[in-house]
Image (cartoon, rainbow, N blue to C red; front, side, top):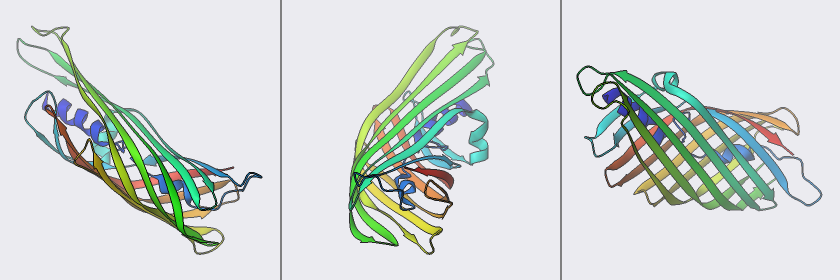
Length: 261
């Protein structure tokens, strides 16, 4: 039962996101190269990515005692049913609009002994979506530095179902939805026409007491359409309300493929 709660709490932290495989905000990933400029002046980039993040912190569900977690990515992966992570950006001169989506689903089963139940199934789903806008305070041929502001929507839900014993057929849901405002910086710099670095830092609050996201990466531009990025990301959130607690930090390597048009 305790392991099921731990894995359920993991999803809530992802995210980002987006667990750990999750899932939060790789919005800088969408700016690592100068994409092809359209006739309108707008540049568009879509970047699916994969975050191999571990998770540490505290989680509480259903008013039960707080559970402390310290899970590596290899611990989380066997319980991952589905994950989708991607960013998108529209840019025109110094102005930009960007978004980041993380969705994850985790599940875990535990066998219990006793008259109350024979088996416990835990399913957790987490969505984190960021929308923001930026303005380049530095805009040079080799790179740019943006100041940004945005809002991130979190939605986490956990369902515990019992089978066998007295509790056979009983299920319970617990979850939370909230919005945090974020501000920060993001940017990139080209060392050569093909090799570049990208980085970002965001911090804020709202429904959560604290919401932050930082990272850096190194990329390679293959051509005007494709770029690859490898880096490291850390994301933290501290939220609690009505027995639901998510005070976690997730961090780990991240890989992305940027598509420009």
